[in-house]
Every structure is written in C-alpha cells, then in structure tokens.
Image (cartoon, rainbow, N blue to C red; front, top):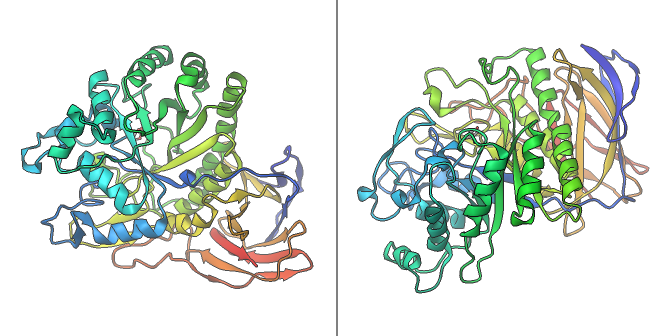
Length: 519
Ligand code: AHR
C-alpha cells in the first residue's frame, strides 16, 4: 500500500512519499468560480418490493400493533420527514419489470397475489400499491418517481397507469381511481421507462431498448396540466456503449438517462463480504471503489456532452451504494445488511463527488431506503416494532444543508493511498455550498482508517468569525447501531474549529465526518 500527497480536483501529481503518524491536508475554497446548484434530488431514495423495505419497513398496515398512521410506521415516517427526502423511486428495481399496477388497486383483501421471483420467491399480496405509495410521498413531502414495466408489461398498461395517477378529467382511469377513493389526481413528474433493461428488465441490447423506449414513452400522455419528466433506463457502471447508443437513438425524446453503480468489491459472482466484519484492506478497497464513480460519471457525461451539445438531457444515478452479504439468519433474497462507519464514509465521499457534477447529474437515489442494502433505517425482522437509524442516515441528515444550495468549487491537497486492487483513495474529501440564505456549509471526511487529520481550509476571502456543527464518528470503522444499542454511532456537536486570518483549522479523527456552518 503506497502513500502519496495529492492535489485533488486538478490534474493529479504526486508530492512524494509520506509516512506520518498524523495527516495534514489543505482545502482551498474557490469563490471566483461559479458552482452549479446541487439539486435536492441528489439526496433521493429508492424503495422496492424487496425483503422488508415496503412490508415491515415502510408499511405495516392499519391493523398492526406497531404504531402506524394509515398503515405507515409512525417512527419511520417521522425519521424520513426529518431527513427531508426529496424524491422516492418505486416499485423497483428488478421488481418494477414484473409489476402489474392494476393488481395493487381496489380493496386490499381482493387484490391478487404474485410471486416476487427476483427477491426470494416471496409471495407479494399487493396490499401496498399505487394509492399507498403516492399517499406516502404526500405524507413525507417528496416527489414520487415511478418505474414503469417495460420488461413484461404492455404499452397500454403503462399508458393507463399514467392516466390513473394524473388525469383529472372524466376519463376511464380517473374514474376508476375515484372509485378507489382518490378524487383528485396526484402529481407525477418522474417516470422511468423500464429499469435495468440490459439485465433483469428484459436482457435487451441498447438498440432494441431504445426503440421500445420510444414506443412506450409515446403513449405516456400528459393529463390535466401534469408535466412528465421521462427517464430512459440507463447503463450499468462501465457500460459506456449503452449510454452512447441510447443518446443517439432516443435523443430528445427523453428528459434523462439513468445509471447504476454499486460499490461491490469482490465482483458480482463472489461473496460480497461481511457488512460489519472487515479488514483495513477491505475498508480501503471499498472506499477506492466508491470514489471510482467519479471517473465513471465523467465518462458518461463526456459521451452525453458530445451528442447532446445543448445539455438538454440529464444524467440520473438511479441506484448506488454498498452491497454486502446478508446478515446471518436472514433470507438471502432479501438483501438485509448492517451499516457501519464504513458505509457512512461511502455516503459522504459519494455525495461530495455528486456535488461536483450537477451540471448534468440531477438526481441520485441511494439503494435502498429501509432494510435493504445501504439503507437509512433498519426495522427489526421479528416485528417487535424497533427501529434504528444507520450511520448512513446520519450522513444524509447532516448533509441535508447542501440540498438546493450552490456548490462552491474547491481544491484539496491531501495524502492518497494506492490500494491492493490498484485503485487510489485520497484521504480527505470535502464539499462546500452556499444556501439560499447566504449561509456557507462545509463538510469534510477523514477517510483514513487509523490516522487523525489536521485540515486547514483557506476560506478564499469569505468573512468568517465562527464555525460550528456536527461530527459523526464511531469508535471503530466497523461501528454500527443495533436495536439494543441504537446510539453507538450518532452525530455529536463539533466545536473544535478554529477560525483565524481567513482560514479555518480543524482536527478530524480517523474515519469520521463533519459538517460545519460558517458564520
Ligand atoms: O437494489 C437492488 C437491485 O439492484 C435492483 O432491483 C436492481 O435494479 C439492481 O440490480
């Protein structure tokens, strides 16, 4: 494992080998360069009919002994409101391309069942359907993002779903919705035309998918003033050909194309490793794989820039996050994993990167919101009504100050590590933004597994007198919250920032994250 000093955000050059006991880094805020707005949708979430994401996670039904509001878990609802969730994607994922929305409307006891073939063969009773999802979004105050079924659904089915949700007229689907108890249409902006169409969504080639996209999206009409933002199913991480073919063949018929990127370190065909029990080398490999998303985003954007010179089409990161082996004793098809400080650092490093590319990157949905993969919230699998907030939740909450703020470009001089699998990891990550009220926030992550880091931030002429905020740290990089110990990893006040002569100086413990407000 080699250790270098590196200036991040500029062409890379190594400053020489270092082997200090304590690290030092510098950050330079660049107020002369105009940054882009960080759309709140960069903080998007994803919910799929998978394991206990919907059932037991978001939804328990009105007759559950677990405290609920109209069937939604009260504790989860409140936690999501506090998180300021901007957008929620549903019903999948792979599930979306086998989902037939008409099975999920009408009286719950009359809804047909189906087998969730993608996720453990669980029998889906369709008790959570369109009404339950759209009403949930209204309760949380977020935009719904519906993923339509292209893989096994018909054009007519998708067209009617849009009519059902958005028409205010005297139309057959609007009347059916009224019959099912909802008088006024919902507002639907984000409409995905298929998911993972190169894989579980139909195993298609991009040429074929592009034609299907054109056909399906033609019949997704705009009713009663509702404006749709149509999203083509995009590439898996390094599949640049998918983006190129779709950009050329679909062009302006889409508002956005998506992308998926998971921080999987052992490859898809091998055990993914434990969420909680890992070595320092695995920690570093996870983070270096995570930051590799920057080059992936850049390459997809470069292709888009070449074809769409006017920048009309957006890039959306539909799914991202860590993917570990399931927790022992849980259904392997349910993807229930714990969440440690390592996951929290993946979250902060990723968000720092996303902030830099919002010229094109307009949304990112972490997978998934509750009980699945890198989730915000875990609810207990025995139905005892317990809930914990994960370290990743805390990062999203601390970072919510950056939603809709303007990114402040910055440069970082920091040590980097060359990891076992020939990737590179800068040991300091940072992001800064100015919100609508003129408040500046800076977030910084010390990614080192074992060294404290002293950081000097050159404030670029900003008139700052004080800086204070929060720190998220765990005793170990593998620290996590359990139902028995829900506050092992929880944010604490951070008051150790020193401001003098246009600079800010902070000391950040290993594998921890801070967000400061400058005043
Ligand atoms: O998030 C879990 C799965 O990962 C989704 O269903 C699919 O789209 C992706 O492969």
